[in-house]
Every structure is written in C-alpha cells, then in structure tokens.
Length: 407
Image 1 (tube, rainbow, N blue to C red):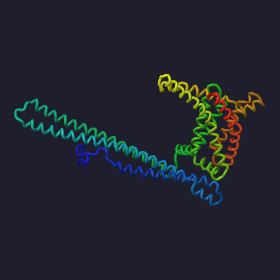
Image 2: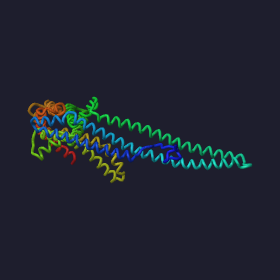
Image 3: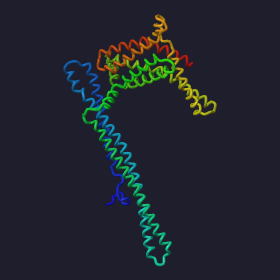
Image 4: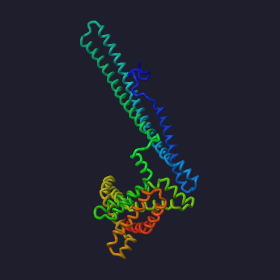
C-alpha cells in the first residue's frame, strides 16, 4: 500500500518526526544541565565542608563523597552527548525529508509523463495505417518515461538506505552514550580521563615546571623552544586554574570572607606562579606581533597591499619572537647573580636549576599529593618564597629588558 504522503514513489524514504526528536533533545539538554549543576554543587559543598569538623561533618562528607560525584558527572556527560547526537540526527532527518519531497515531486512529473506516453502509444497502436516510425517513436517514449520514473525511485531507495544506516549509527551512539549512566566501574581510559579532567590545571603546571627545568639546563638550539614550551604550558595552566571552582572558591574565601587560610594562599600562589611563567612568552609573542603589524602598515603605505605586508611580517614573526625571548631570558636574574658574586660563575646554572627544581617539586605536590594538606601547605610556602625571592625580581628585570627592545 502506497504511503499517503508519497503516492507516486509508493513509500516514505525518510520516516521520522523532527518535531518529536527536537522535543526529546530539549529534554535531554535540560536534564544534562541539571546534572551538571548538581555535580558542581556537590563539589562545592565538599570543598566548603573542609572547614566543618566533627562527626556530623564526617557523615555529611561521607554521604556526598565517593561514587556520587562521579555518577553525576558521567550522567551529565552521557546526556550531553546524547542530546548533541540527537541534534545532529534532527538536522540530518530534516535534510533527508526535504530530499524525499523533491523526489516525490519528480516522481509525480515522471508518472504524469508516463501516463501521457502510454496513452499516446495506445492510440498509435489502434490507429489504422499509422507509419511504423510513428509507432516506434510512441513505444520508445513509453520506455523512456518508465526509465525516468524508475531512476527517481532508485534515488529514493538510495536515500532510504542512507537514512536507515544513519539511524542505526544514531541508535548505536545513543546506546554508547547512555552506557555511562549505569553505575558500573569505568575502564582505565575513563578513569584516566576523569582524573585528568579534575587535575588539568595542576598537571599543566607540573609540565610547565618540568619544561622550565629543562630550559634552565638547556643550551644552544634547545633553549628557546624549551622557554616557549614552558611559557605556553604556564599560560594554559593559568587558564585552567582560573576556571577551577576549587581555586575560585578558595580565593573568594579570602577576598570576600576574610578566610586567609592554606587553601587561599595555595590558590593565590598557584595562579601567581602560572602567570609568572607565562609572561615571558606573552612578551616575546607580542614583540613578534609588532613586526607583523609594522610590516602590514609598511606594505599598505608602499601600495604593496596589506596582505603582502602581512606575509612579509609573518616571515619575521618567528625571528622577532625568538630574539625577544632570548633578550628576556638573558636579562639579569638578581638572586642567581647574587649567588654568582659570592661563589663564582660556575654556580649560575646549578642555582637556576635548583630554583626550577623547587617549582617542579611544588607543582608535583599538587598532582601527587592533592589530599595531603600539610604537604600542600609546605609546598605553597616554599613556592611562594621562590616566587617572591626569584621570579618576582626576574620578571622585573625581564620587563625592563623587554621595554628596551621595544623602543
């Protein structure tokens, strides 16, 4: 029985209701948002409960801690993926159905042409003394009309197969997305991804510190790339930490509530260290960008065109950035220079490496011992002293060197 909406094709090549799919996607998105909010609230409550002592506090943390945050997070991720996949399927289905309607329109035209050709051929066969050529032409017209209609229906069958295959992929992806809703033990990859998601900022800080240690020990062609890598990782760590609810909550506790405890100073030193590590790279890249802008203006003034000027500027961008980074790195380092004056030139590199090693140790504490409050407080104090005694003066000296190169 032919489909009422597709009488000339004879069936619906792209069944489905985009309206219902859109409604389901909206519900899943709303549920995912609610689960994400619940996960953040649980994390914030657990963070705030650190200041609450006693049996009631222990019972409260036991009720919220454990598997609950992970289940909320996994459910949020699963429903978000399902909603996204349904959104894609909705758009695909709308496109498939628009194509199906075009095929139905073509099939209607070809069906009308076929009926007309068959009528003409029937009349020709009953017409006495009709020339053989005219009868052959009428018969050939019927064959062509049937072929044209068959071609349209073939295209509709191909569309139906594409629709079916995509629908199966959507169903499979939805099954895979909702697998995480069940409270099952995740695999090693899921555990690693969850751990990295929760410790991204600290991990980036550790990698930046390691790159800084490599730069302190490096020479020759390895030095400048190591400096840029360390600066880039520090900038990424700063961005990640600046969005971390735990960091923001600790800073808020000090600034708003006057609670200048270990968590506050840990957050402050962490952000300060990330910022200090990223500034040389930002300054070097800014210097290189000046060359691009100057070349663009020069090209425009010389009627060479802005794009030609920019291309010329891009050729010097890397050179200018590297030169600026080298000048910043070669700027006097007050603490290291003080040690050198008292012990000799050979002490410079070991001193710089030791200071970088302190940064590695402090960052490693955040990654390897996140729950050891005493270790983290000690690391904060040591790293804070390093920042105040070494990085702060170094940045001031580097800023003066950078200012001289930009005159």
